[in-house]
Length: 110
Image (cartoon, rainbow, N blue to C red; front, side, top):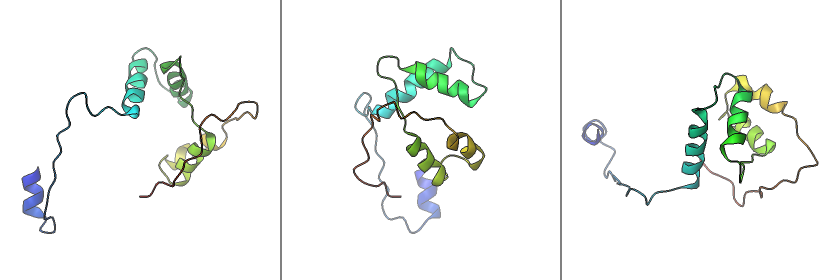
């Protein structure tokens, strides 16, 4: 594949190919994805509420949390497809729950 890129794109001068060492590239998101995938083995998913059940049940000790404002921001950036925007916009929230996630320090740039 690298040879294909090299042959077909004269603008590329250097190709850096990194090989990750097994066990040395662990990121928090890896464990999150693994926990969610593990839970999908036991729960059938047909609706968005099924996914909510999976997210909640995938980690019982320290459950994953998401702020509605984060989800709406993903809608605004079109990371979440438009067809799902009404569902996220109409999510119920509770003022009784403390917001446990701190605000981001810096904006993500593309």
